[in-house]
Length: 237
Figure (cartoon, rainbow, N blue to C red):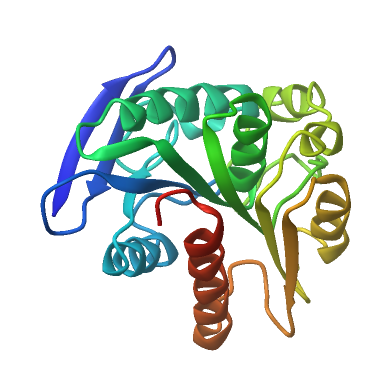
């Protein structure tokens, strides 16, 4: 069962989808935190929602500020704005009548994984996480545009306010997944995050995989690794 929702944040209106397994009762829930210029309709997240539902885990997909069906201009986005968006989504999920509030996790990719890391470090209600292709630095290159989007200087200034590796030291029950030949976020960044998080933890470097796991076999491996991690470490699964 898929449920649409819209909630208000300080910066924008957030559009999202809850995918609830069939049957009565409450379910564990995993929030899916997409990358900088992605959306809730990313094929990775659609596939994750379907796979999680198949093993009795609800998911929440949503669009960050300026993405998909949510409000705001993407050029204005910052890590702080995205953290605020994720905070609002987490509160919605925690109060959802078909979700077990003691059994909440997050999967994040790229910029969305950095956002998820900060959230998990600062909110102990988040019980289990998986970080895909996660940066802990954000350097301005050339004119500052990313994928032909002219982000404002704020995104770079704001990112420097956060010590991602220090925040990682507050996180546990975390699976780090990174492509061996990630052309956007060097594999070394994922390894550094893994070294700083607490046990239980695991890291999987997928041989030959790029930043978005575009090869179907690489993507399927990342999904399977993540699903197995949550089945092991998310409470009530």
